Image (cartoon, rainbow, N blue to C red; front, side, top):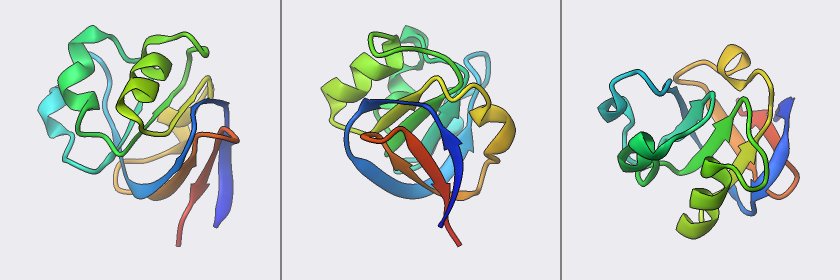
Length: 108
């Protein structure tokens, strides 16, 4: 495992899976059940995609931001405020999201 990003742990827990970059203006049906959603920031129009996600990672946001609150309600890990998740993580990468520490690791 290689640490690739740090942010603010917004919802505890950890998840391993395949990353999917989705921006708010994109076709949100691209997210498959059990993938890890990587985006700039979520908004209410993304809720249908968010419920499929194994975890959520965002470029911006705080402890009371939309992705943080919804992740806690859904019981999935979330890391916000990574500043560059959508630039560093690529769709298809195998990653581990640690929502407690606010860390994202690339898996082999």
